[in-house]
Length: 294
Image 1 (cartoon, one colour):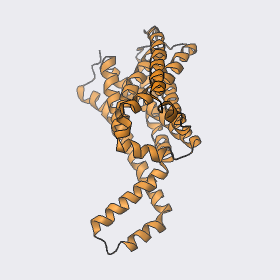
Image 2 (tube, rainbow, N blue to C red):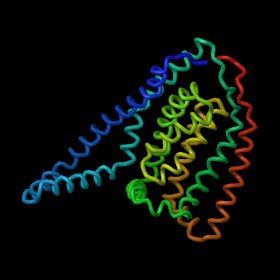
Image 3 (cartoon, rainbow, N blue to C red):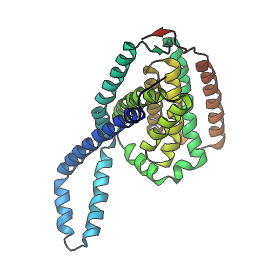
Image 4 (spheres, rainbow, N blue to C red):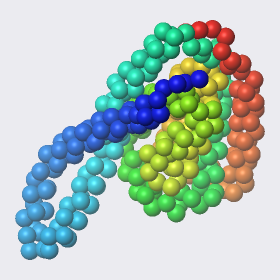
């Protein structure tokens, strides 16, 4: 039983969150400064031409233009901010594991590498199936914020997106949300309480209604995979897989092809549900019960 005072337990969760977003805020300021510097001539021109306009309208126009400039580099910005935050969760993760080893806390067994085939199958089924369901439900088409961000994001090259959104961002997020926050919540809660709490926060970080619904479900599965496989490599692998498949589906217009025919969508959803269910059953069979001490 954890006898850490309530206040310390509270800051053990909130502290990393505040530092994490503090780093992102500083990184965002740096990015905005660089973006403004690269568009300084345009900015000066807009201010000179708007001297006769009311001040609020000028500010609003500049804000919109700034947002457009930021959207041009969305993947690069996301990758840069992720790289800025990685050292924090890596340090906290290894410090927590060092403390666990010092008091000889039992840890879940690490699943063998051959079991990762079930993550691969589950990830493909989840990503393709959920993307099609989002289109079928009309949720994605009604979410203006999601559509605007997606339009800007997917206008960039697929290679850049795969490196930034498909690799760097998932690694950074998994170190923080599963490696640190979930593990620390798990000290105080049972699986479902810790998984749902962290996944809900993880979802709201992503902003739009569509992304909140998608990432809430994904976050719970990421926590479950971490629990069953006993290694942070497992949720990192699943997260990279899901993000990368989403990028390829969109950039290669495969999602448009899948969703252009109702029968095709129905077969896709049923097939993905079947494959996902089989993979989930096999993952459930993995014995994660602690057997050794770290």
